[in-house]
Amino acid sequence: MRIALVEDNRNLCRGIENALLDQGHAVDVLNNGEDADRFLATQGADLAIVDVNLPGMSGLQVVRNLRLRKSAMPVLILTARGDTGDKVAGLDAGADDYLVKPFDMAELLARIRALSRRRQTLKPVEEVIGSLTYNRAARKLCGTRGTLDLPRREMALFECLLDNAGRVVTKETIAETLYGSGSDIEPNAVELLVSRLRRKLHDTGVEIRTARGLGYLLDDSRA
Image 1 (cartoon, helix red, strand yellow):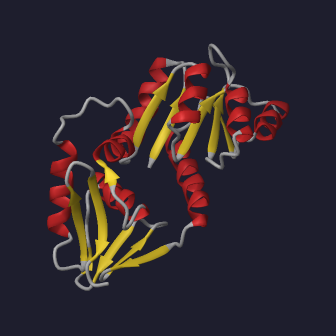
Image 2 (image 1 turned 120 degrees about the vertical axis):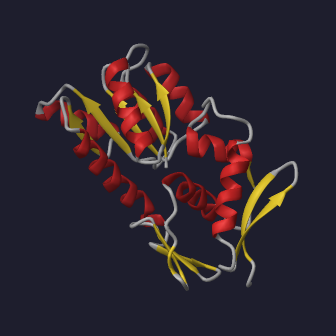
């Protein structure tokens, strides 16, 4: 999942970013409200974590602008303001959840999982392609020979391709989805990841096809 992290406290931001990366998420870090507003309007994300007190533009305004653009992106407000009135203001601005600093990282990750499940209600919990069944809620991929035990990054790649099954996904889109925009990764990192996943999907009826010069697409070879 691609997460936009909008937080101006660099130390806290680094801690959250590392925790999210450990969970296999791609993270885009924004340190002021105006940059966050532009990023969410042009790049987007699967979920946003937004602090309230930001330089340039308040986090509440960032969320309001997001909702004015009719975006349904899940948003978690993260702030030191814990009064009921502050919580109401955040929720009224369009946030889906509210977490008060200081907080336990385990709780933040649990809330992110909950928001992710809410986001997935627009998609079937289970999808079948080839001989594989993918459970989005559990992030579990099963075939005729049992569960395919994929590392987090490979599972994220499979999910990205499945979300666009039958359509070409560019290497740039895959890199941004898996690593975050502007990530300093080797040019062949996506190719190597695709190659590893492709080998594990052998004989499942699912194929990762290469569209030369364009990207990759997931295809049901039994259809």
